[in-house]
Length: 425
Image (tube, rainbow, N blue to C red; front, side, top):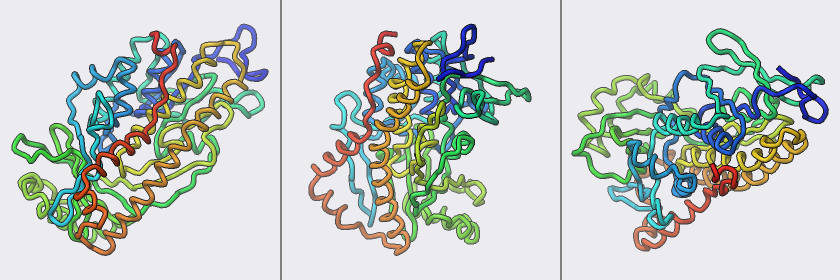
């Protein structure tokens, strides 16, 4: 074990245990670890769970991210080997009619759609690819308990974690927190998080999908009397979302699950036979919708990315895509420092500041857009209206607007091109 001294350079005869510790095996963390390892750096990925199963978590991979994975030589293999569905349109049903609000068929020449791949499939795929590089190490069931710091208690230079009941210390030149919306490292690092306001929560439930089911777009919202429903195609199942006013879970408990079942069976009667199994509110998984920002993404030796840095609402399904874009920018910025053992701490500091400078503006724009969308949806829920708003009718009359909206939405997910060191591998 070593301690960081003298501007971040290890002293003669000392070495770090790894170049970078990535905490959190979600999309941002796994992709970052893969990119660093592929680029030739030493990286250790710590995941607190024993597997990569992420039920009811974002799985809609955007055209721009698919294009990025294609650049890495991964997209086609992923799509060929992992069961998935594709959604070329975002559809909102209201007043008994379907309105295409975003058409992605011109958003990418190769992948003109969102690919819906459950994280339980995507994350092991990326981890397996990372394992092909000698600098990669994965430790499952590793729960971080505290940060390690240099001699004067300032700069972060590693983590202490518990694995199999044993506490270990792991020293690194930089620690990246990719541990999600409830990030422990965000708290340990002393970051200030600010809630930007969210008007909705989501109750999730999954039912089997059959070949006889209607061919829905895969990304669909349905306006029902007093309710807003989400329907996501999960290949062998439908992921059903029941959107409620923020903090309204208690009222759902008081009314019972009957209102949820009634809303879905009224709007989607072909699901009736599979909703008999939903008999208790406790069967629903609550996802409190949050839109959160932090004062800074960086403290000396510690960088936040993904939901640890910016909690994204499930509205639009872009949390996973923003996390992967963060990972791409982080790998580009950190890799030169990690490949150079003489690179000082000041260079790592500058690289982390670069990540925030590149990624914060598009993230802020996405969060502003989400806040507007959530306020509008919450207002419709409060009024109980099912009539389509004027903008829906406008999109129905001018189909080119949906194409323009799809291309514009897709363009907001800007993934930096990988460095040459990554592409050469």
